[in-house]
Length: 343
Image (cartoon, rainbow, N blue to C red; front, side):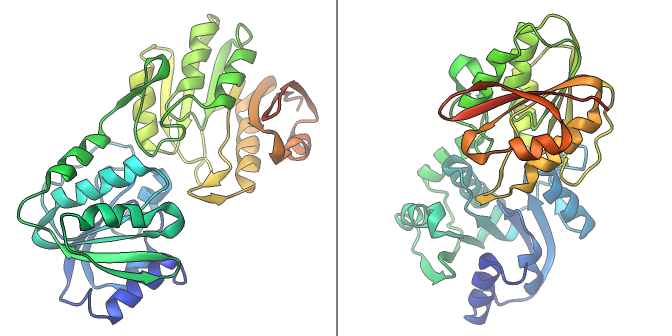
C-alpha cells in the first residue's frame, strides 16, 4: 500500500537523504506488507516473517526468504548492508527482531527501525538510544530511525536475542513471542476445551490452531479421536504446537485459510477459536472465512465447536451457514456454540 504509514516514513527518510546510496542487499523483519520497499533501490530483499501469506507473496515478488513454502529453513548465512525492523504488537517479538537486526547487519551497515506510536515505538527507541546515538524522525503517527551498526554488539541486545527461544508458560506449554496468547492460555480456548471433553471422535480439525492448546486438550480428553489436523498460518505458532504435541495422531499444516485452499474433507469435528484481528486491525470477515472452511471440511452431520467473544455477536454469521446451531455456554465474556452440518 503506497499510502501506508510505513511507506510514508520511508519516503520521508529517503527525501531527507537517509536512504541514499547505490543498490544494496537488505533484510526486513516484522513487516506484513512489503510493498513499502518498492520505493527503495534494493538489489536483493530478504523477508523474515512467520506468516504464510507474507512468505508466499514475497516469493511471488521474487524476494528471498529464510523458509520455503513448506516451512523448511533455507540457509542464509550472509550479512546485510541494511536491515529494516517494524515494531509489532508483541514486545518480546519486537525486541528479538531488533536484536536479530544487530546480528544480521554488517559492521557499519545500517539498521532502520520504524513503528507506530500506539505500538510503543518510543519505548524501543529510548532503549536503543542508551547505547547508540539515534537521529529520530517523527512521521505519520509513528517514528523511524537509522543508525550504523556498532562494532561491538551491546550486552542488552544479546539478552534480547534470547527472546527468540521457546518459553514455557502455565501447564508446561511452549510458546514463542508473536504467537496468539503467548504469555498464558487464552480464556476462550480454556472454556471451549471444557465443553468438548469426551465428545470428540474420529477425524478432528483445529482451525487457527495457534501453539496447539485446543488440540492438546482434545487428545487428552477424547480417547476416540483417530486423527487431528492442526491448521495454522503462523509458522512460529505451528512449530510450538509440534513441540507441545508429540501424539502420532496429530498432523500439522502451515496454511493461511484466508488465501489458500485446504484439502481436508469428511471430518467429524472442527474446533476453533478464530481470529478477529490481523495485526492491530479488526477484520470481521475473518470469521466468515473460518466458518466457510469449517463447513467445507465437515462431513454431513459433522459438528463445529467454536468460541468467540460475546460482544462480537457472530450468531447472525453462524446462522447463515449452520442453521442447526445452539449456544451451549455463555458467560460475561464468551459464547460457545455447537453447530451441525446438515447439508
